[in-house]
Image (cartoon, rainbow, N blue to C red; front, side, top):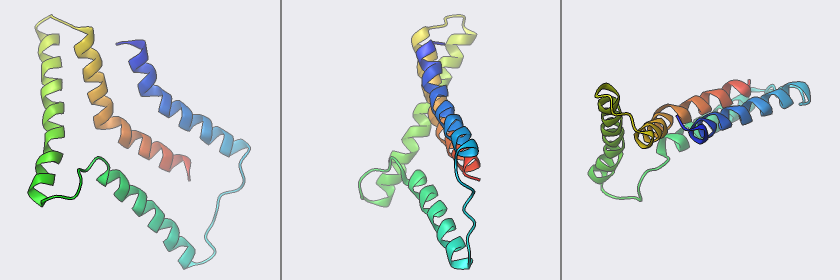
Length: 124
């Protein structure tokens, strides 16, 4: 795998690690809600962030069937790219270009959610 690809995949986790270490040793105490309204506001912010991540990348407002097709294209492209990568590995024809593209697809599939959970765990 290309070192730039590895760096691009690991850099966001390193940034979050640095932020969590700074907040742990230099930051103030954790915020604890004083009443149920503050707790509900905190959970509302978490829910809004999750909805924003879920809706990220959606097309402009259109018919529901168009939106469904657009959203279903992404997993299909990822499946085709990972299938091509698998074929080149099994057939003994490895390619740096295909490997880097498969790494980008893997980060697309798993990296953003991993970063979301790391950020959420760091905020506790």
